[in-house]
Image (cartoon, rainbow, N blue to C red; front, side, top):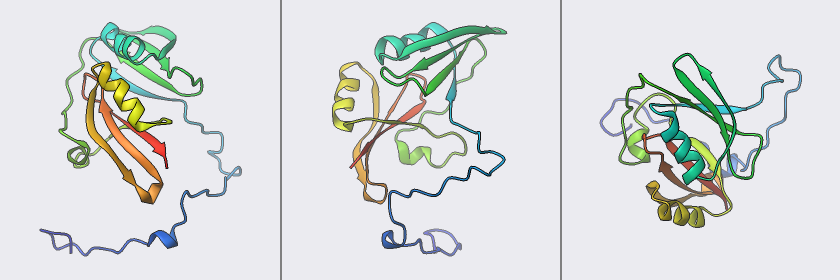
Length: 167
C-alpha cells in the first residue's frame, strides 16, 4: 500500500528486467512516422526580458522573430545545436504560474513539468549558471536507472529545465 492510501502498490520490474538505455525498434509504418520533435513553446509576459534571458544570459541564438496578434514570438536555439528550438511567446496577458521549491514538489501538479537539456557536464554547467545568476533548483543527483546525472534550474518566471549528463 502507498503510505496514507488504500491503493495497492504494484511492484515495478527490476533493473535486470529493463536493460538501459532502451533502444526500441523504430516503426516507419506508423501513420505518425513523419512526426519529429521541433520546439517547445513557453509563454512569457515580456518579450525583451525573455529574449534577454535566453540570448544574453544563456548564449542561445535567435533564429527568427515574428508578431502574432499582441504577442511577439521567436525561436531561440542552443549555442551549438540547430535542430531544437525554444519558442518564446511573449506579450501582455500572461498570468504567473506556481513556483515550486524543488523538483519533487513540482511532481504533484498535472501538466508540462520541465524541458530537458543534455550537457557534457552537469557540474560545469551549474557552475556557469550560478556565475550568471541563474536560479538553480536542485543540487546534482544521479539516477542509476537511466544512467544519468541530473540537476534542475529555472528561468526568472519559474519554468524548470533539467540538465542531463550520461554516466
